[in-house]
Length: 271
Image (cartoon, rainbow, N blue to C red):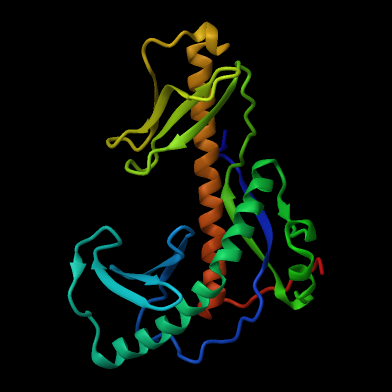
């Protein structure tokens, strides 16, 4: 379970080769934006989110095209026609955005994979994650120089506690893409491929807190774990997953600050 009482500083070594400075400056008249990005592997699309005050810019980038639109009142707010800024500021912002998202799209696939690998180590208890040649093809690893390796540090609340399934068969949790934060507990008995839905953890819309619910008709003797223990396992797994997502997002944002020109890149001391 991720503890909320203590904060931990985590260091991830990531590959970020060729980080030239942007030639277009971010408009000085605008507040510093909050940045986030997601890589959609199947679609080969980069989603970049640029939040400027109460205006949110959504940008979709592919190898061939860039599309953007604005929302007012945050990312979930209504769409905005046009821009709320004057012509000069808008032109400066779009010039900066075009360069920035091109850099993000060029490197996010590799960076995202490296961040997930680092988070796996953090979930296992490590506080430092270094890249390994074993994760790359030899010819790919050899083309990197020491200057390509950067370190990123984030401080996040709590820590992950690895969970061990002590029941029979195998168990895992799967998030509901249509319900943010909710997840189901799936279980396969020994020598069975089709999973059985044991229960779910649901985020209360009133309190924002998770609650677990076991499905009826489950033979918990077959599961090899009591209903209470299985639901506790699910709750802890869910908390670990939320913690890991927090770490992933924080590291991604630190990388984006460097790509946007808002923070300097820190060379890795491990090379």
